[in-house]
Image (cartoon, each protein chain N blue to C red):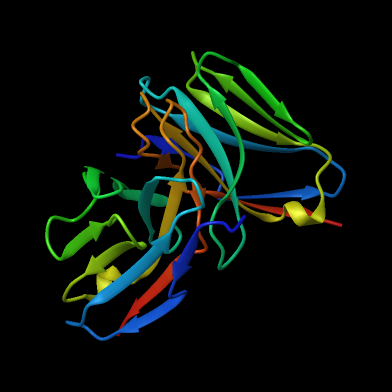
Length: 112
Length: 115
């Protein structure tokens, strides 16, 4: 039962362009969403989060959009840089349970 | 300010042996979480602990696995009588006192290989 899904295993984007990573969820009880970035042999690094009372949150080059009716969130990175090449995970939590449910990840490659 | 620390980074065990994984949370963080990542998969929640208390162990296998976070010292994830299927990356995360929506910060992980 995959409650959080990242349907694109990989994404390739040209440097300077916008990267859009998508995430869908099935559990309408989720009320807090996070994006993490992971390099090989390292732990996930927190990027940005959003509460279900908002539909957008922005931090520098990173913007997360939440569409509650569609149970969909996306992470926009603009402009994309070579250092952004990594695996990106979306994660969800509900009612402060602190029991994050992760998607399978999307491998982002930024081409020069 | 040091981040979440885990050791060892790599651990090799033979089937039937015990594995002990250690996690020291970030300074000021009193909540610890353990996750497991199998190859090509996302992270799966195992257990959530506060000092001397297990808050939620719903993701932990009922047998062979245990976790603790003592008053002094690091959190320990213990796997007894390891089997090949236990081979995975085990990540620890920590967060400060709960106020509703706390970000979890992850350590570098311990990669367990069972031969």
